Image (cartoon, rainbow, N blue to C red; front, side, top):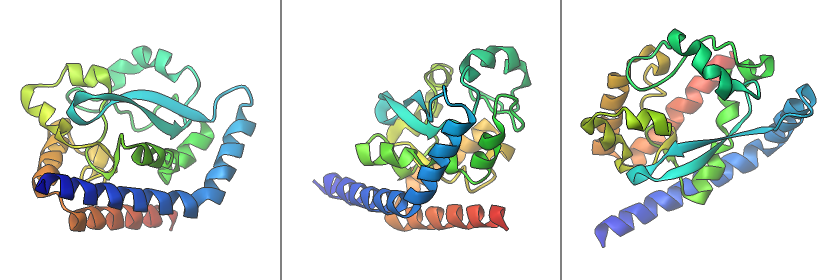
Length: 202
């Protein structure tokens, strides 16, 4: 019963934050959608990708499209350029990213549609990064502990170095978050995320 009450508090917190974020940013998000469509009229505005959530359940994650339409097909050709250790793929200067996409990613605007996932209940505002199915297939047993909670739009990894950290360091941060998870910690991480985004605009 106690766990249900705690989960209910987290859910209410997520709905409130996601609703406010989407309402406040709605004019900017509409403008972004128009710009993406104008840049490539035949391409979709949103990018949908299958991710793995809590308890290993798959869901469709939404983002603004920041890459070329055939980005997934190109991944194999640049796999050797992966700059992350472990079962995770990241390239700082990914050649598949569009000019508009670089700007969207700089301010993490491409990730704002994930608040829709939060409202749907697939994600939380704060939590571990949602992994790809192929990444989970290469997980070791202790990596699966990341899937004990819902993935988040932001988290300790994102505000603690992000791509400068190794995969194992990311897992350690996720474990620390899960162990100490609280509404207060979530607020602190959200404030740090907002502060970092403001810093990029300076």
